[in-house]
Amino acid sequence: MACPSPRRTVIALCAGLVAAPVAAQDNAGPPDPQASPPRGTRAVPTARGGLDVVSREKDERPRRFRVALGVQGGPGFPGNDAFRLGPLVSVAKARGDDPFPYGGVGDGPSLTLIRNGRFEAGPVLRLEGIRRADDLGGGLPRVARSFEPGVFVQYWPSDAIRLRGDVRKGVTGHEGWVSTLAADYVARDGDAWLVSVGPRVILSDARYQRAWFGVTPDTAARTGLPVFSPGSGVHSVGLTSRVIHQFTPRWGVLFNGSYARLVGDAGDSPVTRVRGSRDQLAGGLGLSYTFRVGGRR
Image (cartoon, rainbow, N blue to C red; front, side, top):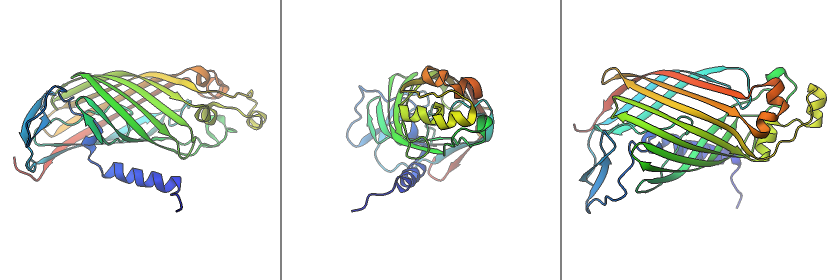
């Protein structure tokens, strides 16, 4: 039997993640690992991250959606020294008065398939931007858009602390392995406001780093840069933050910000030192609108 091509695999995974409820990306608040709801009931998160036990009958509460649209900017690809602008689109979903789920900056679309107390795991998908042949002064190899399917795990040691890690494989573009380790402090008052901040560490294999930061003899001849062959390891450390504030029950604002510093071979590469930048800034600002659909109040 013929194996599906990587492109078809990515398309199928994208379709599954997009079709999945946005609320599946993260918990609005971590469940109590000591709580075991009685048979015939289920536990749902309250506005402050606790749990209520309710009937397992069909949930007929109205669905709530929060849609944010705005603008965001960032390097576009690792090592770039330019700031590229693009649209910001964020969609969150909840039932009744349950709080909208928390998602960290840069998590990517993810779907929780395993949930055990405060532990969650499932598939994740992230995208990496395109480096064109004329970027960074020209002469560097083009790197196509990278689709990175993988798996994530996350754990809430407390109601305000989230730990998360993922491992992803580029099936296009750089075609390497990459992993993001994250920790977030999350403070919120239901959906009235939310503030999160936390560090990020990104690791990658040599194939990933050669695609973005390597200089082959041919490239050196075209660009005048010295030959450079990076290895694997940590290539980025940084900090992210998210702020959400509701002005009214319907209207609000969302802000994302992040700073990363390229380190190790990525920071030492002539691509970064001569043509690009070790410092990677990104941010986004959007206006959100919340509305209800169907169900019983």
